Amino acid sequence: MTRPSESWIGSLTQAMVGFVEESMRVTWLACALLFVAGASASAQMPPAGGVPTAVINPPPAMRVEGVPPIPTEIVERIGRYVSSRAARLQNWHPTRREILISTRFAETTQIHLVEMSGGTRRQLTFLPNRIDSAWFEPHAGKYVVFTMDEAGDEIFHLHRLDFDTGEVTQLTGGEDSVNSLEWRKKGGQLIYSSTTGDAKHSDFYLLDPLHPDQARRLARVEGLGWDVLDVSNDAG
Image 1 (cartoon, rainbow, N blue to C red):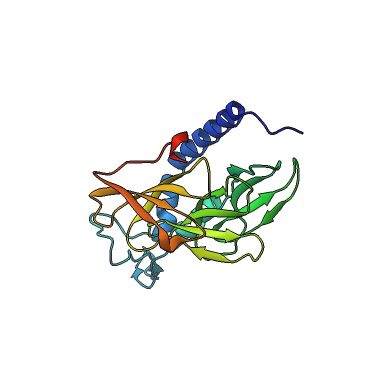
Image 2: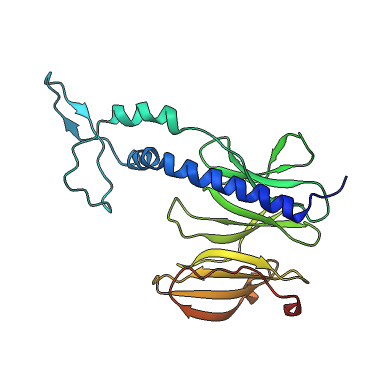
């Protein structure tokens, strides 16, 4: 069997991204309510009958004005509609007819491997935080690089998953959040962009996932929204 053409993969990926974006718009309000549900529910509000009803307390970092108390019962009822699961195509294996997907079986989205058409999913990561994106090492698929934040803080760091041991190694840290990456055409290095902790600059780094301590910053630019789209052939 031959690997699907790049144009077919691009069309499939574009369609999936459109579907995900539309789903996010539809469920944004419901997801926001679930986020609020993470706060404590110790406060009480007296209903018409005089019996106190538990309500949601916003977290300390959230400023709320002019919003009436939200009973926990509403959050529990809406949970049945937003507690759903979808699978997202992440990457094709460079030499085999296998794909990485992300989906959720428990509380957080994890990475799974599908080894054949119509095959079952094999979970690769078992981490407490959700995984956002994942890529095979592009030459032989020896390992996986993925992005993950910590407890929903939206600061994404790069990690490496070794197939032989199942061990996960964090590759980046600090307050900078990784936005995008592309692999070099030769060798095992990648170039990624990140937003600095002060949210005023974007940095570009050259990184070898097997030697993260040797990462080197290539450039810093003013402003946000800068991504790595491709790496030229003469860049190695």
